[in-house]
Amino acid sequence: MAKIVLIGAGSHVFCSRLITDILFYPELRDSTISLMDIAKEPLEISTAFARRIAEQNKFKTRIESTTNRREALDGADYVFIIIKVGGFRYSEADRKITLKYGLDQGDMATTGPGGVMNGARHVIPILDICRDMEELCPEAWLMNYTNPMAIISWAVNDYTHIKNVGLCHSVPHTASTLARYMGVPSEEVSYR
Image (cartoon, rainbow, N blue to C red; front, side, top):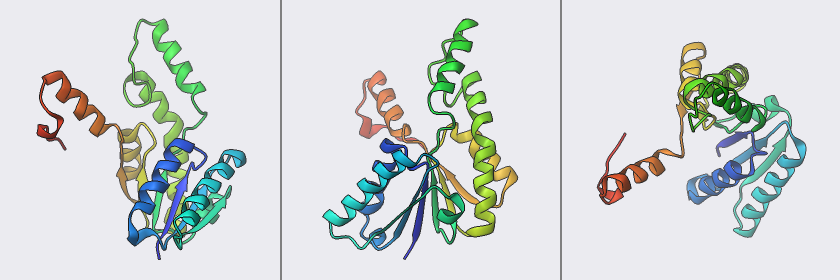
């Protein structure tokens, strides 16, 4: 039975989609899903959702919930990180600063000056999570959904021994958009 940890589980959109994706696979339905967030109220909402999905489908999934990261990570097999340090207020501040200097870069989370600032906010907390993982679950796989994905993946690879994968849910959407721009069916576009 695998232990799957979601750090940042108070993020309702990502958390609910990940839980649904995880429970889609029969092989994972007997797992323990440990939900962790520093914000208690959003965590309680995500926990209620996870428990309801498991109960309604009569899955044997064990749902844990905690604000203690080390407790969640202890013995984990897989760790998903879906955090947003400071929420959206910092991203908006980044955008205002770049607009002041004539740069409307669009995706402030991953590229350009906004991506660099977002990386500066996220790298240290994620390396702290990795240090806990090195102690509590050194063989676990880290699945990072936090942006900027590339900067975070570089930092994890350069400064820890944690096996990790950087994930981005927008890759298929971008491929579909590019196919539409080119006037070809999206199923005919391949990418890696």
